[in-house]
Length: 417
Image (cartoon, rainbow, N blue to C red; front, top):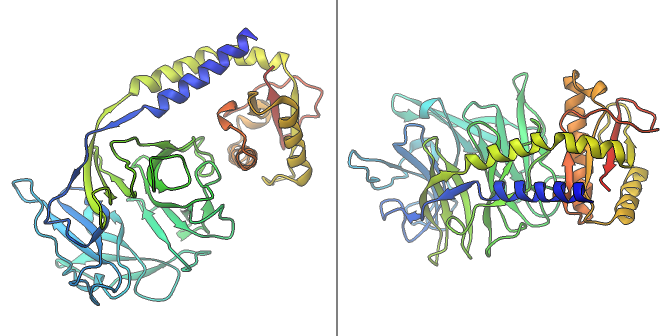
């Protein structure tokens, strides 16, 4: 029991460290050269920090008038550090549909855009040639639908697209999906899983430069009021296994609608909020501290207690889930087995998800498959209301001492007594 309590306290402490990892300065609303009596959203800053792109709705000067779609507007930073008066005079980029910048490449020479230029499902891009934006060109994304609200973020290296839309396996309203560039083509969008997505909506995704974190807005996770902005970290290089989303706190979030978060390499933050009443405006903030010591402490604590966990594995009960060859879906009998496991041990008991290291550690393709299998179990647990803070996922597995018939398709569930 003493060993169990140490492990319980350890993971609770680590969870607290992660939750307090980033602190922001008090947000300031950008001035009247950017914000107006209309609605501003989707701020996106160029790499040199001198050009701010955003979308504006309900403005008489939009193409098509006040009640047409959104236009892309642009403001530039002057030598004095002030933003110049915004303009939507961007040639081919604006029409009567919804227009927005969803990514910037090549030091601002290429912009990725909502595809508002034909009726196909995908995105578009434009290039700056002789100081003019050329006519946007279409990029197809298979499996995407234009039904309802669809939002995007394209990474600067043009390797990852995050998408918010209602797909065939959506958990509620809009979910977050990912499409990856493979062999010159974009893959069919994959749902990020139930750790990130909820029965509410998840919108306005943004990916950190190192591709380890996503920022997004949701009304389905616990927050301060309407949509809040959250952060989640990617685990084991998987796009379907994530840490529990952390609310960015009361400096960034309010009782109103907060979304469209973006962050620059110098830690400057932009987002949209209607906290002041009326239509939404663009706000600016700054990361003022990162508790890197917390992450270091967390890693050291986990390393120091690895022997403790190994001891627990040797002494505790081992259960197994056998997947089919190259399969990552839970069968009905496996779901029943997990439900029985929860009913037997209670929802507050901790356990470990792991594989046999002999089968996994030198097989990269098997590691990827097993990440998906672990994610399948995690998502099922979440769907049943289980507190996944009580679950430990082992990255590479370890020696399993049990009577179970071992093979490479077996996931082991170790109950910590």
